[in-house]
Length: 406
Image (cartoon, rainbow, N blue to C red):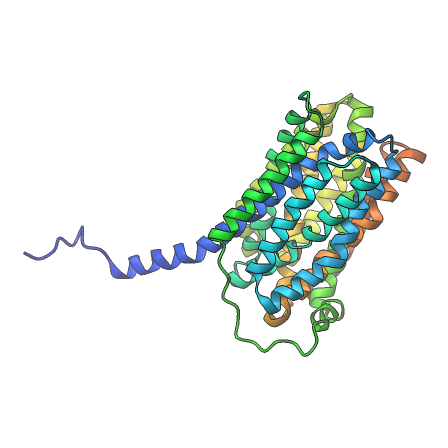
């Protein structure tokens, strides 16, 4: 008897299904790698101000503590990106995940502020692997779906900041103090390494000749307008966010009386909005409007929200401002990553994305001490006002160059 046409497999549809699954698997895998990486990072960040306070440091010293992390990231992001162009994305990601988890152990066991500072330098050096992760995404996505792919990185960040700060806040309220949540973060890092070791595959890259110089990609990122402009805008974007990030723990304690637990829930709410936007909506928005045209809108929303935050009279209205900041970030970050990767040749993509991440790291070097100084010497809300002004500059620049980037 002939096969029932309603039940017989359709070879075309089966092939399409297999192709879709094959393409999505590495994207989902790198999402999980980034998520667990940021989960451990998210546990530490909201409790770091309170942890450092046990060593008797000021907000200005805390700014330098966070700057040390970013200073190391600034130097190592291009190195990891360039190295991954030559030896592969997988080995670089595996090594940095493992060593990053080890640095978390050193952070938890720090007996003085100087040991803590050194541990954060190590953590920052290995956190430079985000350049390799973004290059990995660019390797496995088409230009049409690049913003959606970069949204995966942002969704990993967002979800990491949903569960990480909340978990860190809860664990910090136990009798074991601040060491326990940091050790949990280290354990998650080691689990992330095991997961990546067994699941993460090396992506297929374009068959292109290697650069004559390992510094060529770094130079290209700063001389080609298609990459230099997004790098500069990402610098401004991050410089603005660090003003909020550094002063956040001290501000909510001063304004609302919230300790680490309350601060963690605030950040978790921001992470939820960011993950929702970047995990699903940004791809559709980028296809409809284009990344270059979305940028000014994202910058504007973020600027208005940052300026409004310090004027919020209660925690509810303050949280509304934070959701606006998260919305702006959720638009700006993946669009800038997408535009940078599109402007980079495949042979130098890791190095270019390394410079892109270094721009963010440089902002995190300069921003935290400035934010701490503003908080100590001007007013608790002044870092957010300066942040809003910086993002407004980003809005004006992105508005003027949107046709060039489109």
